[in-house]
Image (tube, rainbow, N blue to C red; front, side, top):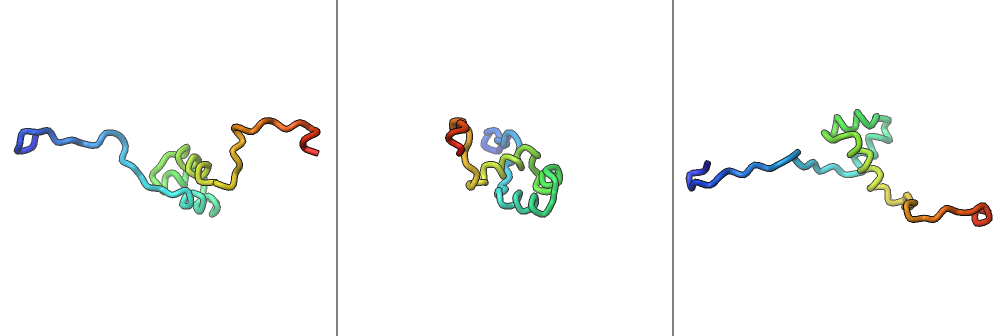
Length: 74
């Protein structure tokens, strides 16, 4: 309790980490595994993969694309 009688608030959950997708990509391009990258940056392996996926602006979003027929591909 504080001198004024209020409670001290503590943050809930895991502390935020500010990691840029470029950091993960650079380590990946140097040959680091997803586990190694996660350990070095203090994040989970899925988070590392997600950062690269979300940071990759050149990759087309294929979730909303309709499948091409054989005639459309030629």
